[in-house]
Length: 558
Image 1: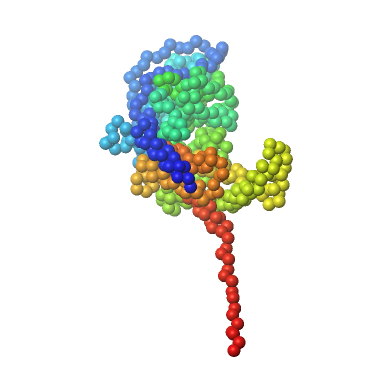
Image 2: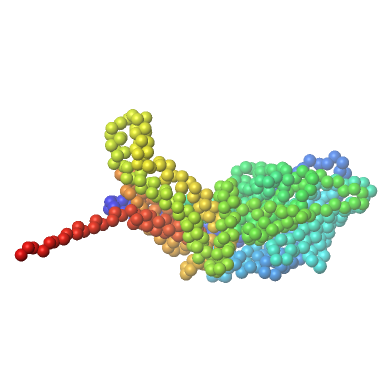
């Protein structure tokens, strides 16, 4: 190898590592959880008022809010306030779901609190805009605790509203039943609204390819079979947010590994989902149900289920409301626009099965990568052989270029004839790679979104598979291995191609430095297996040593 190329590669790698150590971004993925934003209203557009509805009654005087607590063993502890009948805290109790406080480095990691907003922007608030009665999101309710949960009541004039909260066992779910009772002699019309709120530090910007990954808060909703989702920066650019109408099944706000959503049982009314964000960092995902009329001395009921917890796919898929699947699992996005979800879900199931045996997520990733390499071994082999055959034809290709010069038509015909003569398929090196791409994209996106890896250790210095390798050991090993692998391949005659061939490992090392350790383990393992396959193929292509000539001597005659 050219010493100048080697020297340039080493210098480039050194510059990248020095820049990362001293000038790289310092954003912490848990920074957004340290504080709560100011209480700023961020309402969805009001629905058109129902002409049959009477004038709203004067608002009731506010009473002092009361706090109540629901605790579900091993899962979460939720503190609710009567001001909005909504949670002010939703603390995850599993010891794995904790976060460090960057301002207090000596303090132990604290349990994650999924509520990052305050009154009047709390999750699970309900209201009745443009209705015959004025129940606002921050109205004060009366509360009773007992039985299977909490029961909140609000009464004004001839209207009585109850909101019953009941934790579902062995899950992160909370069943919510909202009942509207009309005590008057006239029909009452109302619109129903339920809100999910979140917050994202506006100073924390999404990282690029060569910067630390930063978890971005996302508002989402499921409407008529499609999941609408936008990150904070995307919603802020839209100004008025995003609106979707149709069969809205759920609305929610969450981050990379944790999510809060509320699902509504199917009903015939038109529904609207509004996603929005404000400059102070507040975000909202709001569901508004079209007009419903309650007959005199009658009642109507809204069945909802809230999920607030880690994005464990099996638990998201298991959420049901009104006897139907809530489809909250569709919030998971595997690959671009979820194109590889059909592969990612089975891979996650296999990964969990392996972990059940080996008890280490890092080892499980290695074993899964080996299994996938076994599946893709044959197409990879075909691709390598095709590229090697193309390289062997390089001298004859050069002769054809000298012969035909600028006559591209004749050159192409002669080239195809050369390929045909030697049985070389020019697409043989590309098609196998294209076949493998969905598999690797699915595995990459699955590992990047699996909360199972959150704060899960591997070995030694790697204590969290969702965080980057703190000492860059895995990325550097990956880069070195890729560099060695490049040396086993035919050297391109073009000097620029040759330079890129050796600089690619340097660029890939810089890219891998910012990836979670779980993803880097996959990339390192796959690179090692590819190198092994390349070495075996080259070893098999070595010509056999010629056998020594056997000579016989006849005894001389006397």
